[in-house]
Structure formats: structure tokens, C-alpha cells
Length: 480
Ligand code: ADP
Ligand code: MG
Image 1: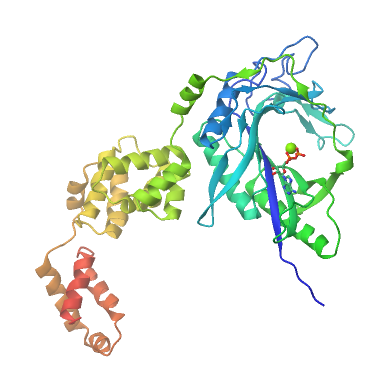
Image 2 (image 1 turned 90 degrees about the horizontal axis):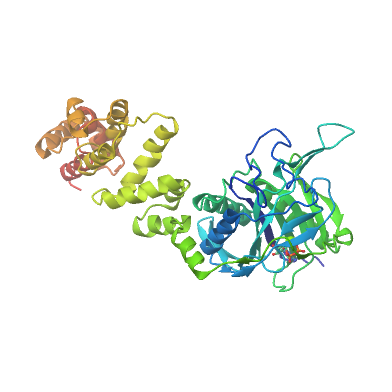
């Protein structure tokens, strides 16, 4: 008998966030990206005997910023641990990390997937340091090591296994990247490795509450790759289960050019890290006053902007997303609307998204462009003194060339819209008289021809008739 089971994927992430501090986690070496190999490596980074680490205040502060933003409980007494393993790019022979008492516990991340809100729980966020970089492809016989990255401060965020698809993870990573940028704790640059994640994936029959063995796909540095790796794994694991095979816990890598994952090591080769508290760094004690100070310095976060834009300003989800993509744009838009209550947010959003941001990105906006000109421009449209399409096509290019008071410019260009009922009615009558065939068709039920009549009225008025008035007048004359 042909039996089919519905499977569901269970996914948990370990995300590494590189912090934008000037100096490393435990010494004053620079963290600048892209310097010549091994130039940011003092004796502490190189772990010479007798050197001692000193924690970086910014790393602790940034961890707390992220923790508070995500509703974590902040551990008032956390400490570092040593995690031992042997590898050429780890000079100390251990990584300084947190195991027993991480700085942030619990919390949750709320993000949007295909227009719906989704929350996943966090297990914890801890502080640690990066390892150096091994370069295996530069030579066929030798590997090279660059220790500039060794000791760069990281946060590791560990989620509960609450994701169910690659798409969810994709949206989560993009949201997280924006969050760390808004918090100004990381540049979130995935191409430079500032956000990397390990994806833990298992598959189980729908309805089963226990977890099956998982595979961990290591070191993924883009949201798109995470989605592809997860989707590949779900298919692979489902296929194996359908054939009656059991999934063994293992570590895998994602081969970006082939779009497949491949086994690296099984659970049997798992490390024993011999964790113990780092004896050279005092425990990190956080007072309530310190927490309050950091809390009061938090900016408005993306989800709060979303709430304001969607609920208070009534923008569409897509428009709101475009504005929130960038902290300074989101902040400016919000304050612009508050300063200009007469301008409908939707009108302003259309303008910024379609005209202002592209011009800004192209470097076309001069410093002489004061906010009052934006306000005047939008007020003219809102007041019906110029049709939006004419404003964008004819007025805007002139305004951007030479920022100036908008109404006089509009008058000089002879673009002021006609709201003269008599004039519009005369034009409308002319149009109906000049197009008897169309009129006949309209009367026989082809109501779509109204658009044609409107187009003719607009043409006769050289685009200046108020379209809304033109439509109403035509409808009146046509007896609708
Ligand atoms: P370890 O310490 O061995 O790395 P953790 O318990 O810390 O394991 O889990 C690491 C990540 O794997 C977490 O994000 C967690 O949610 C996820 N995870 C754990 N078990 C499973 C599973 N069976 N399926 C999918 N993800 C899992
Ligand atoms: Mg882990």
C-alpha cells in the first residue's frame, strides 16, 4: 500500500555577530577589515606566554544592547570560559567564550515572513572571540594563516529550534542584520563575514513532538545561502526517511557553487572542549544602574517603526519595509510626518520612495534642498493645485535642478491645475460632441470609454484639468 507521511522541518540557528569595536576583545589590536595579513597581531593576539587578556567594555555593552532589544534577561553575574581545541588559526589553543553563565538568557525575536509576524525563542546570547583565518587555496602544498581576525569580538546568538522553513530563516537573518545596524553594534556586512550562522536542521513526521537527530551546516555567510542549504537539507533528510534510513547527527558544509551540503564529520568525532572558567578575567558584574543607562540609550527599533508606519500612518507593508531598510531614512520619515500633519503619509511615502531616495542614492540632491521645499511640493499636490503625475514629471526635475519655493515655480512653468468647474465642463462638452461614435458605444453599455473621454479632457486642458473634477463632470454629463 502506498503510504505517505507529512514531514516538517525543525531548525535552530547559532548566529555569530561580529561587533564594530575599534579594538579586539581582549587587547588593543585594531579590528579594521581588509588590512595586510598579520599586521593587527600584538603579542596578546599571538598568545605569547605571560600575556594577559583584558575584556573590552564595548563588547559587554553591545551584548547588553542586543539582549535588551530582544527581551532577554541580562545576567548580572556572567563570566568567560576557555573552550579548548587545537587548530592552527587558534594561537592560544583555546577560545575565550562563555559557557556556564552567558550574558543574555532567553528572549525572543519577532520578524515578518510573507506578510505575517512570526516569533522564535532565543536560548541565550554569549560573548566570545573570533579565530584567525586559514587560507588553503593560495598554494597547493601549504596553508597560510592570517591572525588579524584572531580575537575580534563576537556575539553568538543561539535560538531554540523554532524555525520551520528556509524562508523563515532567510527573513530572520535579514531582519537581524537590520537590527544590529539600528543598534549600531555591528555593520551586519555579510560579505565581510560580520554575520555568519550555523544551521541545525532535522526533519520529523508532522505531529511528532520529540526531535529527531539533526545535521549542522556550518559557517553560512548569507541569508540566501542559509535558505538554500536548509531547503537542500530538508529534501535530503526527508528523502532518506522515506526510504527508511535514520539520520545520524553530523556536521556538514554547504558548497555554494553546487548548492548541496556535504558531510564534514560525524558525532563520534565530536570535540571534548574541556570548558572551565577563564582564570585571567574577572567575572563581569553588571549593576542595575548600568543596565538602565544602556536601556535609555536604545534607539527606536525596526519593529517599532513598522508598528508606527503600518498602524498609525496606514502605509502598505512593502512601502514601510523600504523606508525601514535604513535607520536614518526611517527616523527622518517619522519626524517628517509628525512635523507635517497636513500631508498624508501615503503621499509622502510615494514621494520619498519613488523620487527622493533614488535621487539621493544617485547623489543628485544638493545641500540647498531644504525640507520646506519638500513640504511645499507635497502640499501643492495634496491641495489639488497640481496633478501628482504632472508634479513628478514636470515640476520635480526643475525643483531638483534648482531648489526654490514651489508655488512660484509651478506658476512660472504654467503647471497650476485648473479647478475651474465651468472651464472643465466646457471642455467635457466639447469632447462628447467631437466623439459621437464613442458616445454611442458608451450609451450601449461600454462604460470603459469614460477613461477615453477623460484622456481627451486632460489633453485639451494640456494636463491641467483636475482629473477628479473631470471625471465627475463627465459622469454628470453622461447622466450616470
Ligand atoms: P550543541 O551545544 O551541541 O551545539 P545546542 O543544544 O546548543 O547543541 O543546540 C545548537 C542549536 O541546534 C540550537 O540552535 C538548537 O535550537 C538547535 N537544535 C538542537 N537540537 C535540534 C534538532 N533536533 N533539530 C534542529 N535543531 C536543533
Ligand atoms: Mg552549539
